[in-house]
Image (cartoon, rainbow, N blue to C red; front, side, top):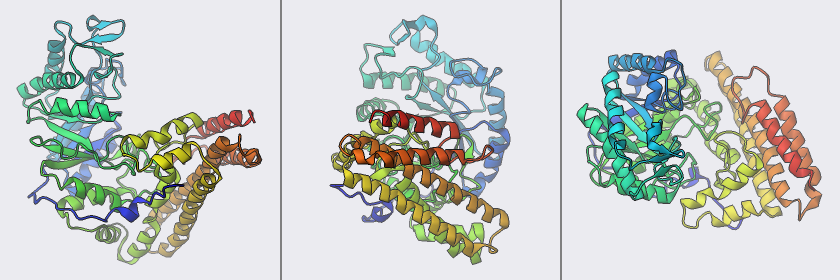
Length: 521
């Protein structure tokens, strides 16, 4: 590689931070994704232990408000989810927790405001219809204390002219939409939180301009990074960008892009790095931590340390990652096992990064193994958010040479060696922790080893296919890697709850795609 990217854990602390003195972070929130009544209540029972005061319902629980009634494009239950969420909201209130719900806009637009499938945002009555929809929702469901609104990954994106037609500029569209929903929130004494999640830098700027011209009573929520959960991204440029608006920082403890909590990804250094940076801005008033992805929760797993880190740094910004490690390990596993547990788990951050992010670059399909075209098309994404730091790296991953081929494979080999070392070190705590906890750690690291072996074969096949035209001698190596992927997939037990990088059938499908490409040589 022309540029050697150092791993984050090495470079996080080469700067000083001045953290504004704040008597208490106003918002300390957990976000739930899966509508499992028992699970949600179990999580809320844990909230006081982490000084949490707000719960957010999102994703599989609710995507648009029409799901409350069992209608709309994303309806999930015939009779709607409204009564279940009402019950959970009441349970939360009994625990002194506020409740916010997600909503995506625009969505479920009536036919009279559509023309050839495109929303006519300037049509007479459109904005009153939208305000009335939220006014009705608050009347029907007074248990919800606020809305968290997001604009992407929705039915009609207001910044996409192929989906929404309007004479308004892009910033003005954001402003108008936010103001319209804010009217219903204000009238009903509900909070409005606007997420700044979009895909492109230009869209981020439009959204910022729109937010600059709405009421300062509206809160802003921004991810700690500018797009999706790539740990090598820079800090989100919108953190601290709103001079007069309270801002919440969103974190992913659900490991959406790093194994979905199936495997260890214990990252106090990372979460401390991000959150301490965010806390330097005076208008940052809290955090929102995503807890679960598709029902796989960070709580009750080794990855709970990431949730623990956010809570402890909030209470004491001077606390170091090393202190967090020691305190958490003692609390969870006991004094006698704490050092051994740290030795076992601490490398997992580097391990997963080396497996999932070749040379620090995102090309995974969330946590799942990517097909050739998906991986190839995502290599350059990181360049959107850096000026030029990754250009040489992404260029060589896109057009690799034999040195690149060796480096990315060695990266996976190093991760596999670290996994094996952790498995050996795990033996040092056998008998010092509960048998159930020992078996859980052993299962997760065995799965991590399985994951590493699949990723090694995947990157070998992927990069080898790129090189075959100029290096036909690689064909047996590529064929062997594809065979390894298939054999590893067949080794996955039918009833295995935790998955390494995808279901067996999906892994086999990807390998078949590689075989088709190989047949051309």
